[in-house]
Image (cartoon, rainbow, N blue to C red):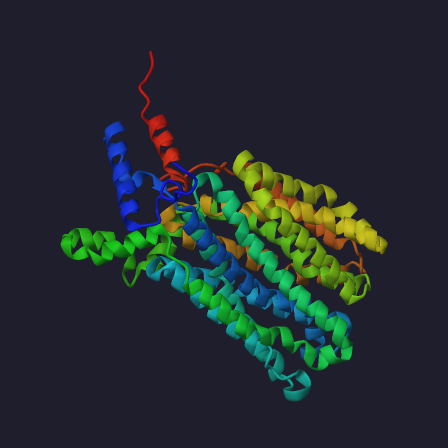
Length: 511
């Protein structure tokens, strides 16, 4: 067909084309294999997939912008809300409040995961966006310790708990959403954009904090400047909410809604069986099912995510504080180097997604974990040297290892669990790991350094221990690249791929 024609290039542009397309595959499937149904293969529309991925990733960026602000203002927040005691005590109190938000993340995951299966992914992702934006905005409005005393840190902890609870439903929902939309052979590529959204959010937060530190100075930042990034969260939250509302539900949930609409034609028994998961006791039953049936995979998920998050939070959250508070670099220098590192990661992360689609999730994950284990000490020795070139080189070593994990996790983790428990299982496993290991990383490293007489190599040793756990966990994983999600039919990008797949499944045996 000529280049100007779009019907062949975009078979889903109108309902009639979609109807003909479905009929075509129903006929092909049944002709070649009577046992195949038209739902046995899902043919994705790339335009729809890209729109869904873009909206999920940008909403994720808004969410992590809110969460990243606190990390980059940890020193200032310690001075404003915990002014008593030494600088180390103030910083530890600030990081302890940072870690508090992670304590409720498993509760958020246990609540939002089953809820997403009941009322839809889109509604839950919109709800988490509202809660995060409100929690962040309220932190910017809290009076300082000098103004209201004890109630100032109490309110800070309260709103950090709101942030943590909302974030508990974020990663599991967004990664499940993208994984269920993406074709099997491009799940790594599309999934990498979710972590790109995370990097965009962190970069935006670091950029604003850097600008304020440079233009206002330390005194103005402590007096009022620290509030500005938190107050920006309000309008940004509205943008994120709009993007989340514009999301389309995944095909799996749309099918459920369609079945509900036409349930009047079904028998009472069939209807009750089909929608039994929507009953009042469904969340408790689902949680019991997850822990009873998925516990080996949950342990694998927790170990993998724990190792990943220690390395992630060490580099993207703790490093600016390490450079400023421990090595006594200028605060602007630490943020500027981190900004450059994250920009580079954003430039290469989609390439990593393509690589894990082609070569497998395990090789890329193993490369990242081994990279941290081997280069942690050389990287921190370089950072310790003090020159700008040495610091950049050290950050580059850590960043290259991290991007192998960032670009692969969003595709690897949803594939660990079957479809019927994917959202809930991933939300619980992911948030338990983040709560136990990720959010406590700055606190644990700061405390260990205090115990070991300010030994600046403590972060390197802690990173190596996490990476070793990651290496063992990746070795125990199954490879899932280019394979259908467990419990879901194959998903392909074109009708030609579907025909090829059906042909391969129904070839005549040769003797």
